[in-house]
Image 1 (cartoon, chains in turn purple, green):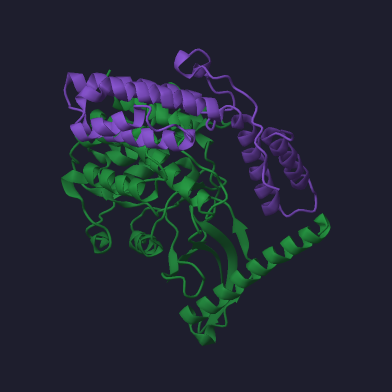
Image 2 (cartoon, helix red, strand yellow):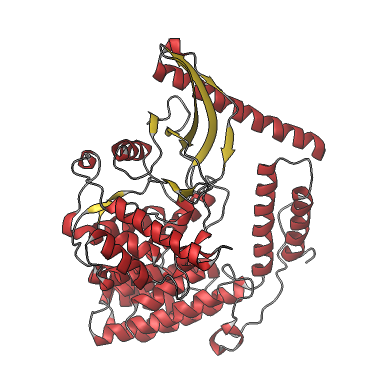
Amino acid sequence: MRPTIEEQLRGVSRLVDELAADPELSSSSVTLARDAGKQLKRLTSSAASRPPFLRWDNAVMTALLRDLAPMFPAELQSLITESSDGTQPVTDDEAQNEALRVLVTMAIGTLPDETVGNRARRTISDHLRERAAANPALHKDPKRPWAADPRAAESETPLTEKAPM
Amino acid sequence: MSSRTADATEGSTQNTTVEAIRSQLENFIAEQLGPDSAPRVGAVEPVSTGRSRENWLFELSWSDSTGEHTESLIARRDPDGGLIETDRATEFAILQALAGSGVPSPPARWLDADGAALGKPSLVMARLGGTCDYYLINGERPESERVDIAQRFCDLLAAVHQVDWRRAGFEQFLTDPGVDAASHELRYWQSVLERDRLESYPELALASRWLEQKAPPSPRTVLVHADFKAGNILLDDHDQITGLLDWELTHLGDPHEDLGWITQPLRRREHLIDDAWEPEHLFTRYESVTGHPVNRESVHWWNVFSTYKTAVMQVSGLRSFVEGRSDELYQPSAAVLVELLDTTVDR
């Protein structure tokens, strides 16, 4: 559906740039307009990557929690099973991402200190490191591990959701 | 509305704000000096130094039995939101207690602790001469000059740590955490994270666990500046240090905390010079000036803590932005998260 969200964001970004260039604007307003312009550009460049990023992150976290689950207390294991047994359809990648990050945080708090715990922490840390490099909200040109990951092999498509008028 | 009309309205709003602050300051200072002082506040100028407070520069004129006086002052007001939330009353007490300590700090004049007079909690202090430059240590000057300045910054930090805080009465408003200074500071920033986070951060949970397990004992209690950097140090035209600013995070604690803040890898460009002023140069000079050894392992813990603290500040900044209390969008950056993950998970 046109205009896509990206097209709309680019349009608003252009308007904000025009505003920031107005020579009669006060210096504090120019600063505000420039900051808004930067944020819009970041949002525009990251909008298309966000859904596949979230699906990839969710898939990796789900697999990671399932693999490590035997190390966790029974209550946490139940929560992990509930989140990944497929009985609840995933309709909101953002909400699922938040829920999975809560579970990973809880899991970190239960890991033992010794070798087996260290190994699990390394596994979690390796993914979080990769996540930081791939997060489109944090980079102009983030890595795209989902492009090569069969668990999240959904293509990156332009957003076509209609914006509220 | 045409853009021209919008500009005029915006400019008018800004002028109204500035005039309101000028008028509030004049009334507030009249209350402090007494009705016969007839204080006059000149043009008030907002400055954007620092990210945590609103700063307003102004000239004050007043009279008393000894005659007419003028002074350059700065009013620091709490913003609606930002990276950190601190207490103006404590900052005011710190500045008062520093007077006569030998550490160049802005003389504190008046405090509006609850914001009854100035709209938000505020303090007024004297303006010191000189300018700040965040990246002075790695600026355009010849290396020998930059090393000389870095050495004098080190001596300034040593002077802060040598303040006789017991004698100066700092215990009346700051707590001595004793040997547990590291755990004490960590618990404080963990509580800020719990208060301000909008979501879970497993990256910070990993770091938190590492920091809890490896917190070093403090060898002695000193006055910790807690944001020691070139951007908070004023230099005059002859490169003499005229002031150390931003005492809002200052507390009693472990001297390694400031050394860890200065040598944290992510702020290297602000504090260190490749080969010529590395952490070892700083530690050796600090040891020679203070007579106290620097424990390199403790400094490493405080390096990691400094990165954790930066991440928590970014989390607070994100909440402020989302709640409409600040204009700048902060969030834990990739560099900060990766640095934490690289240093807090045993490989």
